[in-house]
Length: 65
Image (cartoon, rainbow, N blue to C red; front, side, top):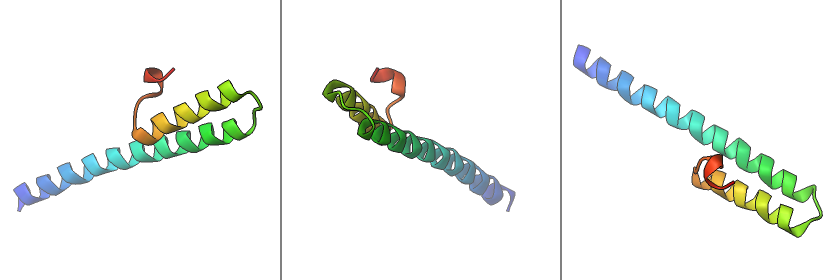
């Protein structure tokens, strides 16, 4: 019983971390997409959309700046 309980705890905690990462990525993606709508410069729009796509792909922001 203890082994099953520990297995369940390990899977639940890992899932929790994944869900929080996914939530953060979705919120960042939405933020960059909305920022792209607020500007006129086509290069800035492309930069924001690239960042949004990077968040959708789960890449860290620093890898696309």
